[in-house]
Amino acid sequence: MNIKSIIFDFFTQIRSIFITFKHMFDMRETRLYPENPIYLSPRYRGRVVLTKDPNGKDRCVACNLCSVVCPVSCISLQKSQDKYGRWFSKFFKINFSRCIFCGLCEEACPTSAIQLIPDFELSDFDRKNLLYKKKYLTISGTGKDHKYNFYDHCGVSIKKKYMYNIPINVKDLLP
Ligand code: SF4
Ligand code: SF4
Image (cartoon, rainbow, N blue to C red):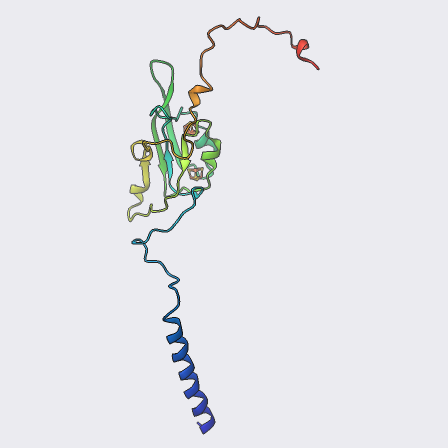
């Protein structure tokens, strides 16, 4: 080791100490999670929930579209029917150990029942606990879609069935 390298090493050490000291006054890059929660955009695709309509009733009509479209087949449900003929899911389960949070179920749902919300805290030590039943999937609110009520638009019986003189001559509809 010659004198030149000793001087070089000395100044390298001084430089390192200076840089460390300088960064002590910089803004902190890391966050103290979970004490300081992280902001997630409203469109964040996290936990999957079942919502209710503005009247507080279950939105899900057990059409099975979400289950069919799910690429990992993690949704299972069974249809039932109440005394008014309204369909509902007798059971509804999502296996979050398989869900990839793709959002396809939300896109397919005609009633806005199933939605992905900005919540990612789903981890668990036991896989069995990641199988969520309807009771734990259902939230009390409307989620992102506050006003939409499927039954305001569909499934409403037509009172005057023949008021438009059905059958219509389709040739009358031609341009
Ligand atoms: S987010 Fe994707 S993977 Fe998860 S339940 Fe919906 S369709 Fe299935
Ligand atoms: S697509 Fe919507 S309405 Fe149909 S079964 Fe799934 S959650 Fe229910």
